[in-house]
Amino acid sequence: MVKPEVLNKSRIEVKKGEKLDAEFVIQVLVEYGFERADFVFEPGQFSIRGGIIDLFSFGNELPYRIELFDDEVDTIRTFDPTTQLSQRNLSSLSIVPNLSTRFRQDQKVSLFQILPLNTVIWVKDYQFLLDRLQYCFERAEQFASKLTALDSADLREIFRDRAFLYPGEVTEDIAERAIVYLDGK
Image 1: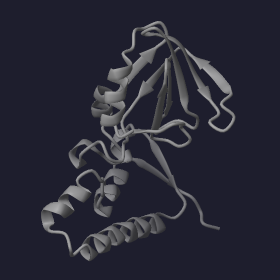
Image 2: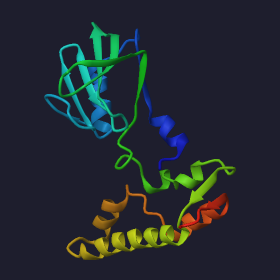
Image 3: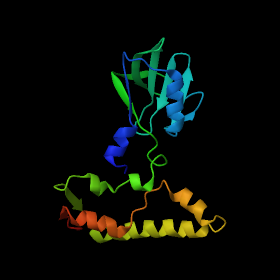
């Protein structure tokens, strides 16, 4: 997860009635990892046709349609990408970058570090959780070791934006919180 303070600095708010420069929007969306398309149908795409900006956010089930009147935001709404029918009118929206690729390792933290310390964690099978974390981490290490054609600088670049958590770090974060163990029966 991205540290909340880092994410908040990267968030761009679009509000109904405010001025919006379409060229600025294009620049920001490309920088944030969005891809320009004729029509949006999956997260990470945007389209601009005249005074209409369609944007499929990385964190929303439906894309947004921003309609401009000259350079002012006239309407913001979600729409169904298959039918193009509006679903809900909005007064504002937040645009955030692609969380998987935009942020460096040092800008990311475990989910458990974001949760308040008084959060109660419910676990059905604690050992299974630890085993699964270890398995995923080992798979990532195996993948990295098979990339022998790349030098270490290339490998660092590939993994720079990925947040790989060591299983020990997760257990430390969990140990700081109350845990309710469920009976596996």
